[in-house]
Image (cartoon, rainbow, N blue to C red; front, side):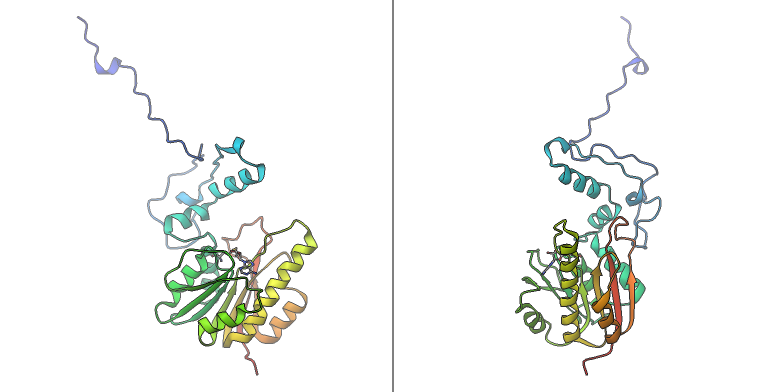
Length: 265
Ligand SMILES: C[S@@+](CC[C@H](N)C(=O)[O-])C[C@H]1O[C@@H](n2cnc3c(N)ncnc32)[C@H](O)[C@@H]1O
């Protein structure tokens, strides 16, 4: 009887990939073995490959939901945040701003307005350590972040600022605001809502900041303008705009960073 030798056997079929939303990833380069020190995914790292993941469940989804999911699946910062245990990709924006402006110091007292799902709280709590204090507010519920006290409330509720001040128990070194209201699609309404949030955040900052303190606030399009910019320039030594690399380039979002609060009196 003729025996087949192993080389004449038909090749084994490759195992089928698990079914997930990720159907394909176009890999341009080898995945990096270890994350580098720099926060932004570096060229050639796993996170920064040219991704072209498409959504397998697209037929069952609304078009907008598919677009959102596709963007998430293809976003290197989303992947990096997940891999490193940050609650949100926004964590990298604060890390970049901190690197550039030296905002978060050991023992610092930080207020985080619009803090859910908690990326900035995580970054701030880690930076200030046990001797510092981080207080956050959001009207969305979020799981606790070690080292941060969070108030679940609308910041525009007139009782909110006093509650935050009581939680803080003293002056703040930094007031951060990443607050963004859901957009309506009506440009001037959206613009007014953003300005209202930024002005409310600045009112609060002027009330709680220690002399020398800093204020960081999300703004859009042209950045801080009009009354807001005038007030910032009066109250702070230095006022700058910054667009962190982690902020999507197709987003009009940027941050105004004001340092050297001149004090209340
Ligand atoms: C971009 S997210 C913040 C992400 C956060 N910095 C992080 O690192 O995870 C904006 C947040 O602002 C919150 N927000 C918007 N308006 C608010 C308000 N009036 N009061 C409290 N939170 C508000 C939203 O609920 C949302 O969670």
